[in-house]
Image (cartoon, rainbow, N blue to C red; front, side, top):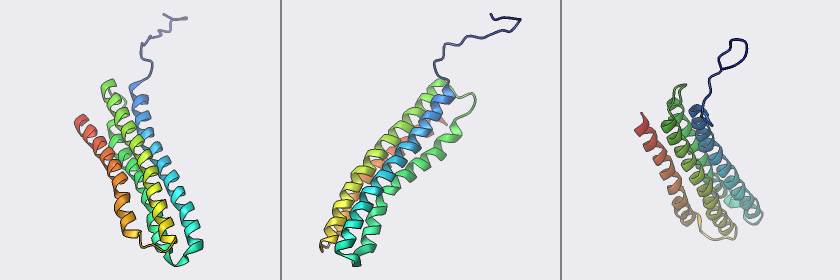
Length: 163
């Protein structure tokens, strides 16, 4: 079918499996990076305000402000785990699994980074007010982090089942 002796092959695929898999990869990296950038900004704003009140605790502010950046690193790790699975002949089920894994990690990392940042920002504010809240804030900030780690573990398990 086609003009001048050119054969045009019709496909029923709305989206190629390779493209679908790369969308999953982009979601893992992009959403986790957005969450980390947003979370670090929340903490940075709190640190600037607290620094005005108590400049001697700047090390504590910096330590807490950096915590939400870990979720972006999980997305980066997810990239290196999923990328080798994307080949020119990737199947649609594999591509859907990669999309699901990337979306799961990206969404969990996005929200956990923001929620972790809110915990850290409150801790930074308390430290700025003269309270000894660094240790407690670190412990409480681990809880949202745990879910980002679980998101990465789910991605690793999915990727392992595809190998």
